[in-house]
Length: 91
Image (tube, rainbow, N blue to C red):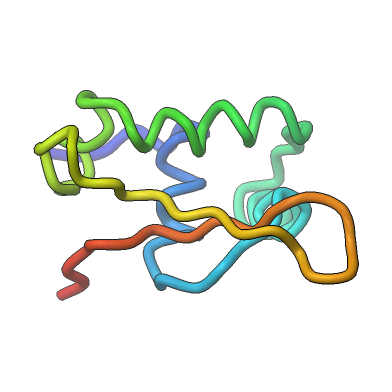
């Protein structure tokens, strides 16, 4: 099955490496790779979508809704948060 390269897909592809990402880093990577610009609220919504059943199923994330798949931590000495995918198996 070919996956549609929508914003959820773009955010997932950025975050699959398990590293922490800021909205601005994701924004920049998407702009660089698919030449589309999305604002911070839209990227935030896509990160939230990764927690939903539809995205868990689509991207092979744990389907148990009690298992957190996105972790956030405050940026030390700055504003905002960094996010990363957790509990993922990367093959």
